[in-house]
Length: 233
Length: 233
DNA sequence: AATTGTGAAAAGATTCACAGCA
DNA sequence: TGCTGTGAATCTTTTCACAATT
Image (cartoon, rainbow over all chains, first blue to last red; front, side, top):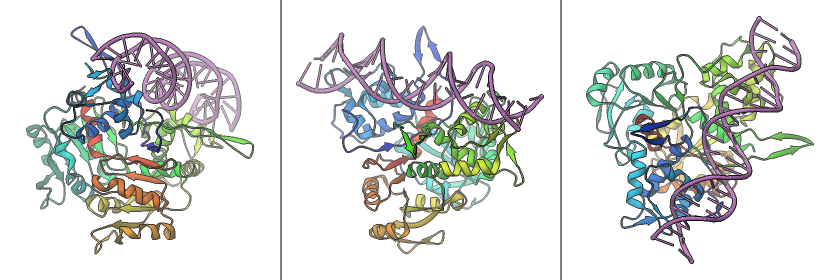
């Protein structure tokens, strides 16, 4: 498969900030870190595999590439970073094995408990997102200083000052910030103090966290501005 | 400024798909395309500048870097791609000029009209997002096949089949897809047919569009999976 | 005949380091 | 002295092209 015929167009550009990769020796074997760019594409492959007909035994890099909007060479290179890759020359990749390998590479073992902070419009919309469970996550709690009477997607909103307590007992692994920008930093700090080491920030503010904590920023205005740039040539 | 002391941590990794840049001659002068990575950071610089005290005359690359979670060298390199850069050695960048230059590079002239398709939870949350106007955009319409009685953020929800008509008269420039995944492709096609050439897709589905149309994907499950990966080492 | 796996080449992005200017 | 602007070096990512395998 080559550069596409009808073209997927520019499938989702980047959002670019540094980091460094190192090789980690594990019992004599060396497992190289999966490149950041590859990690960014694995979820898309996984979703495609999930949508595949149930009896389907194998799939080719061409097919994955076509449906995910990348090149076949890229798919093969990406999959080659997973330990113990599962392709068979002349045949393709075994669907089940590949799903398992990608899920493992993404750290999706048991259901990952996620906490949402902010029960306003955005928090509610996120909590109501269907795909949570299907994709290996579970909303384990929703906290706010307000809306304490509300129940969202069957989950009772709890006070923010209970974050620390519940974080431990429910093993909150990922925190989602869905508050106004003004309190985003404060919430991020509370999450970090509660032991959360991965944060997804929907508030339009850069938050600062100590080393070892990963933050990803999702921001409507930023996305629109990037689109506006490409629109204007 | 160097690699940070308290560290911004890994500020938002990527989400990586190809594209190509070319030099465009304009009246004999050659304006090189701004690198994709730079385009991805400009909105963050712009937001920082917007939050700066009103009387502030200049700002240094160090300061921008610090607050946006990148290195000073990177800021300078990025700003050097804007035509007619505005820094003064020994002093810094003139705040107002820089704001204007970045806004221009991002194609933010007059208010850009945005259409939201999908008036459910996500559509409502997005429409209610305060920063729209402040950042150079305006919700010019909300369409759905349902919820036609509703009014969101003061805007009446209109039928999807009116998309074509209104797209022309209101000059919809960017379309936001906030529908279930099952109809995302259909909506994308409708947007393209209506003349929209930039799409922000919040539905968890890859949409295919003809060349010349830019799509950006924002997906909760993808973001969580990427975070899960970094969480698991 | 079909399709993976992968070195090597090319392209792109980041960092370095320092000359140049206010 | 302080801070920008930028070429050159380095690192990362993508693409190419083809041998290897079923």
